[in-house]
Length: 270
Ligand SMILES: NC(=O)c1ccc[n+]([C@@H]2O[C@H](COP(=O)([O-])OP(=O)(O)OC[C@H]3O[C@@H](n4cnc5c(N)ncnc54)[C@H](OP(=O)(O)O)[C@@H]3O)[C@@H](O)[C@H]2O)c1
Image (cartoon, rainbow, N blue to C red; front, top):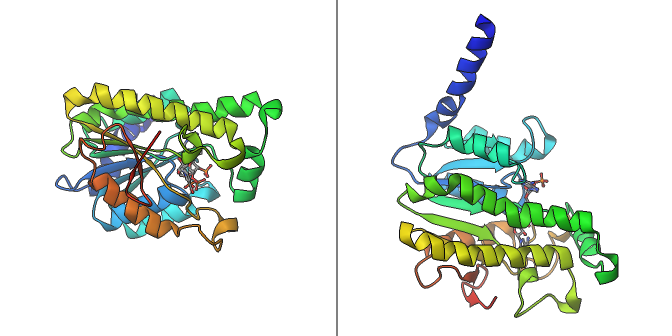
């Protein structure tokens, strides 16, 4: 009985311990999918800028996919790693409850259901209308569309309570009506990103009264996978993330609810 009580007490103290290194005067960012690609580099660059970084990943502690993020935390006491699966409403709500008193200046919805190699992504995206895998489609919508909305619902109050007041999602030109990917590829992924765009345009309207800016950002093509590291035309991750952070900084009523191409800085058509 006593041991159970002690364990519960220790668990309730965990967030306070984890956040102990957070500077109250520093800005805070929460990033989803922070263990790889753009998310990992976002965590690294925001940490280098002196922000408090809540770097989340759906991977459990000890998972080999967390190695690079754990290495970052070792050199940056302003980084806290939290497990967060954007499809798990209960997990998201539990984390938000632990951080209820922590203002979040930038809520960065980066996680997506993508393959670990570019080749596998292409193979998935090449499936035509007659080969749609509806379980895979459901997974894309769960992670890419509903995931950010679950995170916004849980952490919206933290953003409203902050000074920075920015909610961001990383979208994709695969979701564009104006300039779809050639050949009509990436049906599931593209549809899930188009639906995310719609959610965020409506969210922007609803967040006006709270003074919160809502931004959608899409890259052109960033070398986040090992098999495209040396591919011509694929932007280095560090360069792309520096541009993205700059564009998040530049968010204004003129970009609110719009989709900004963070490689060019231009507002793109939906
Ligand atoms: N790279 C590009 O050129 C490009 C182009 C257009 C749009 N984007 C967008 O940019 C964002 C980042 O992509 P990326 O290229 O950096 O790919 P990535 O390296 O594969 O990153 C995706 C991240 O999302 C995580 N994730 C997957 N399922 C999750 C879940 N259920 N809950 C929480 N996290 C989950 C992944 O974790 P695991 O890997 O451990 O599973 C990974 O950390 C995505 O929104 C993507 O759609 C990228």
